[in-house]
Image (cartoon, rainbow, N blue to C red):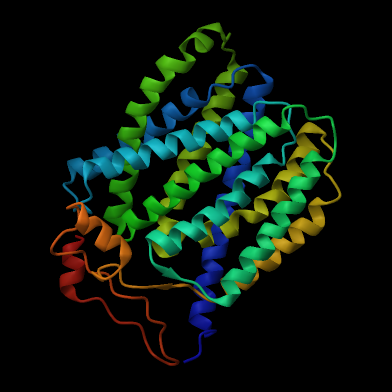
Length: 357
C-alpha cells in the first residue's frame, strides 16, 4: 500500500485549492464587516438574516419542489445546527466591531482547529495520525505568535473583548462545521441541498427573533446610505457563496482539513489590511504564517481514517441507547479504506445513479 500515491495527493491538492477559495471569501466578509463597523451600521444578526433567507428561497425551495431524497435527520438536529451557526456568526461580527487588531480573524480561524480536532475524534470517530498531530501543533504555534502580535501594542483597547467574542465564534464554527460534515456525508448532492436549505429556514427564524430582541432599536437609528446598503449586500453575497462552497467541500473532505486550509487567510488579511486600512502588519505575522503553511502541508500528506460509527460498542452509541435515542437499525457507514497501488476506483452501479436521479 502506498499512502502517498498520486491519486490521493491530487485529491488533497484539490481540497487545499477549495480551502484557499474559502479563505479568500472569509477575508472578503471580514472586510465588509469592517466597513460596516466603521460606518456605524454593524448589525450582526441583521447582516446574516438575509444570508439565511437567500439559502431558504434557493436550496430549500428546490429540495421541496423537486422532492429530493432526505438525509432523515430529526428536526431538533437542524434547529441546533442553525442555532450554533447563527450565534457563531453573531460573535465573529461582534469581534470585528471593537477597536482591535484586524488579525483577530486569525484567532477565530486558528482556535477553531483544536475544537474541531477534539470533536471529530470524540463524536465523529475520526482516526488521526502523527502527521496530523504535528500539523495541528505547528498551526497552534502559528496561532500563538499571531495572538502575541495582536496584543503587543496598546493601541487596541477592545482587544480582550474581541478575543473573547472570537473564541466563542470559533466554538460555534467548529460545532457547525462538524454538524454540516455529518449531514452532507450521509448522501450525495441532495444532502448538500437539503443541508443548506434547512439551515437557511431555521437560521432565518432564529435570526428574525434575535433581531427584534437585540437589534431592532439599533437598526432604526442607522441612516442607511447607498454605501452602507452596498456593504451589507457584499457581505451577504460573499457569505452565500462561502456557505455553498463549504457545503460541497465538507462532503468530499472533512472539517479539520477545512479549517487548516483556511489558515492562509491570515496572509490575505495582512495584505488587505495594509492596502485598504493602512494598518501596520506586525513582524510576528510572517514566522507565524510560515508555521501555518508547514502545518497545512504536513496534514495534507495523509487523510484521516473514518472508523465505523454504527459499532454498538462505541461510547456514543451506548450513551444514545441508554437514553433511548439509538436506532435499532443504525445508519451503516463503511470505513474509509485507502486504495491499493494500481487499484482502480469502483464504478457506480446503475442503481446508484437512479437513486440520485
